[in-house]
Amino acid sequence: MTDSDCVLCAGREMDGVLLVTEVWSNEFWRLTTTTVGEIAGYSYLSTHRHIEDISALDGDEQESFGAVVWRTTSAIKEATGADHVYVYVMGDGIDHLHLHLAPWRGPTSPLIDDPIKGARHKVILSTGEEVWVSDRYPLQPRGLMTIAIADIRELLAE
Ligand SMILES: [Zn+2]
Image 1 (cartoon, rainbow, N blue to C red):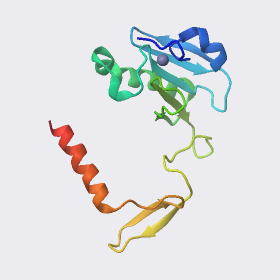
Image 2: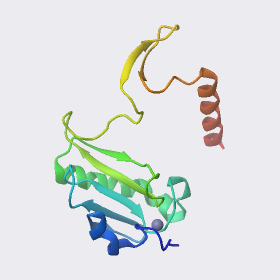
Image 3: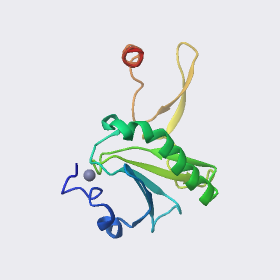
């Protein structure tokens, strides 16, 4: 299944426009690496099939996902000498599943290491707990957090 308007479904045809080059692929997955950018080795792991997110992985894509992420991030880490390879999955820009595999080389790295927007400041709660909180977004009510925890736990218990 492909989407004719999707730049990732176009495969190698769009690599030049996206400033990436294919470094590996198999029947289900494709790894491309940036040819221009702030970080050498910054790569994208995408499905061949047009799906929007990880929850839409199917059959062999699901079964191979962990092994493929391990294999590709291990290669990127070794090739670049990175301390870690950050894995980001967004999806708001291009609605075709792709993981950003980003080699991180210490605190001077240009990578964003916090998924919450805004500067962080420490808050001591009435319970005595210390948390780092964004200056742009309020803490969510404990009841909402508890519902999300219970719902996720229940779904995974099935
Ligand atoms: Zn697509």
